[in-house]
Image 1 (spheres, one colour):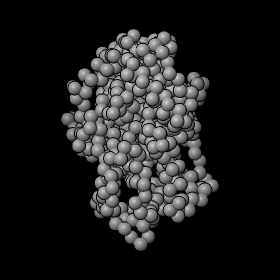
Image 2 (cartoon, helix red, strand yellow):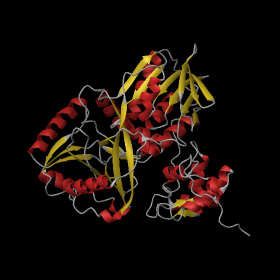
Image 3 (tube, helix red, strand yellow):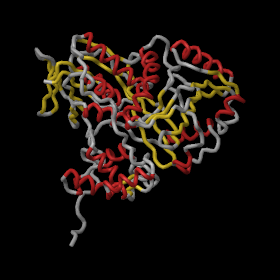
Image 4 (cartoon, one colour):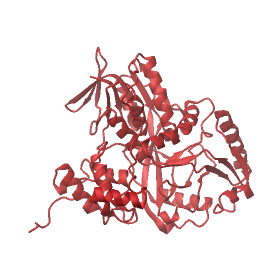
Length: 477
């Protein structure tokens, strides 16, 4: 019997698990996919929003501003890359100027610090590459960027290091109420818990229906992206948004914490919660608007594309409710969910306490975690020392991103352990460069097979039936 079961190992579920691991609790994280950070968390804009967009008085506004303030310290403790680069919302005409003035007023009301309204000359001084058609902007110095799946891996790993358990490939198909709490059923396996937190992203409404709650629904909103080579990463230094519409903040142009340039997302409401296909229409839209925002984007330097699905709730706000004692929904966590995630974790912990869960401090709790990039960020002297102690750090496997065998082995051996090629990619950036794994993929597959004690052809791209190799073509001598 667990004290708390968390359904969903995305950034919100991960941050809640980490928060609760600071107390003397038996915690289990349940994830239907083969790894953590496999839903909306792995494919979003990676922005820590300042908090000027959400409506005054909303839960989104409150938790966005709180989470944004908390994020830098959280990233530091977890050894996660974070950059306070600031954001610009650009405008092209008087209508945009009026909307930006409204956002400024809203942001001030929400408690966002240091907001400024800029004219054409001021904004172009900050970002020379902006289109000459940009005539105004809202500047938010507190805006930042982070890697969402790196944050999630680190948060869940930290929770596990502090005693939490993770069960992947555990899709909750039924929930049964018991005298002591709940039984969560997945196939032939059952997990019992006194309290349940529903962080299932796009499927939070399905989980809610299992306890007879149909008070909200969640639908997917498609967002397609283009990722450009690192040599494009300095084209802009701030995150550049367009003046928002009802469907979102439009196509952004932003550097990433890893030095690439990100363009997107599109915003299309969908019905299919599994449709993550990219489209020619989506890419055309991204290219057109990105070129309207910033001059000189070298589209030929695009190295990959991807699509994410945002979980849009039916209420227009975050849905963090308790339909009954012992069960909490954390649903409809669309943008700015990543930014708000540290604050959401505290909000949920307070709800659990109000419901009667005893939160006694864990005397052995350690909030800190070693950075996954410790070797790459080390001095030359430190690298030589580490290679002397472990020669695997001296063998570069991914030349595009300069990732060593030692770092890949660390990813396979460190909580939560990488079990497939995409898992290694999210933890180390191996396969994320220009060749997209064309050269390093086979050797990483070999390392995974050896470490997990499975056949080479048993290694998958992302679990399930995503086979990389289907058989042996010739036997070695």
